[in-house]
Length: 103
Image 1 (cartoon, rainbow, N blue to C red):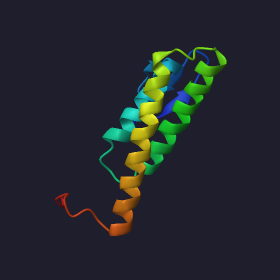
Image 2: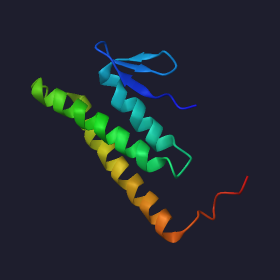
Image 3: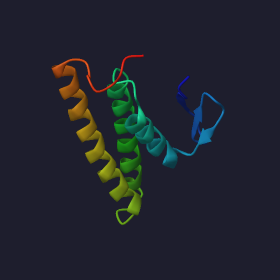
Image 4: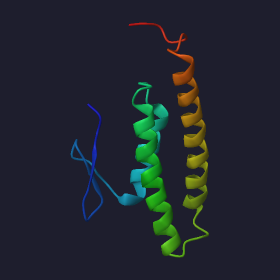
């Protein structure tokens, strides 16, 4: 069962009871998008990761942390998510993935 985030004042509470600081949420959701193997879930994972990354970037910008290395990580994550989304859309247009064996 996937861990679903729920926002709290102290951070984000995952359904398994783990508390992630908001600074870590975007990384968790980014990994979930990149590592997702169910292509039907990938678009949703991408949206969740983009939303969390955008919120984190806005927080860093408001805090005047423009030299923060995490901003570079966020830019890179956006590029990867964009490419993942292109591949996902391409796969949907071309039909089922023939390289994945049926189970």
